[in-house]
Amino acid sequence: MADSNVNVDMIIQNVGHDGTTNLGFTVPQNELEMTKAAMNELRASEGVEYDSDIVKVSIVGVGMKSHSGVACKAFDTMAKEGINIEMISTSEIKISMVIQAKYGELAVRALHSAYQIG
Image (cartoon, rainbow, N blue to C red):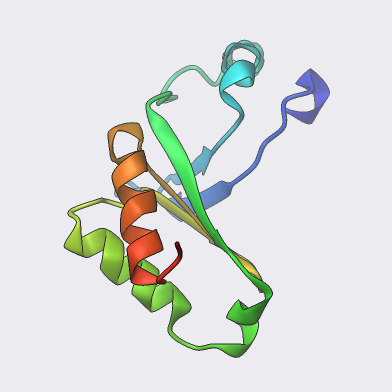
């Protein structure tokens, strides 16, 4: 992806049911076609899936590293709204969740309410 000047954001690796390694990653929407071309050059098109109907919702704040339960509240909020989290990425100051685009606005509103953000 770097050789194709594609900006890869979140990367998730897990083991598939058949023992193969699965990689999932996000790229900016405007770089999806470049990503597809790069994957075709790698001859990795077999078993490759693309989903352009997702959004990333993030919770950001320096206080996260000193307060426990921030992630728990975010995950509980998504669960209560029936929103499946497809990918999660965390750091000391940020939790990012990839969800279906149709739930983007609902997720933001629910998280604002859960964290009492105006």
